[in-house]
Image (tube, rainbow, N blue to C red):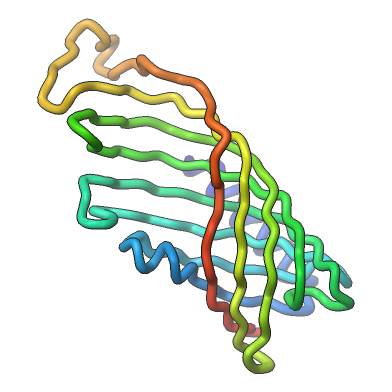
Length: 183
């Protein structure tokens, strides 16, 4: 996870040197679910941008949920300028989670990719609202147990081995972000 974060930061820094516009944002839907998010979007061309969002949820929705996610995304704007109007995006998602849900615990990693569609509404020259929804495939590799159970057979060299893996087709990104243009 640290390597992925380092690579994404290096790409963002290198792109920002040539960028016409840089904006920071937060996803209001994730913030409302007590999973704060922070993102950055950099204009890369006349109709394109690259963004990355970081989300950390601890006790989200008052439940035993802890998740750390990173969501890089490339966007193509159908309007005559970037960061305005209708867009289509190609995004990825990666993260780690530890969830207690309905008498079971799930602890693992997930990676995926999908398509995002949305609309950016400019409130002022620097402030805008971003409505977005995305859908894609997410692969997971997790340790799944009943709450309170001890599974000693799955330990090898001090590490707990995954006992469930697969993929789901599901929403990868849904929300409303508020963005502020820095440059």
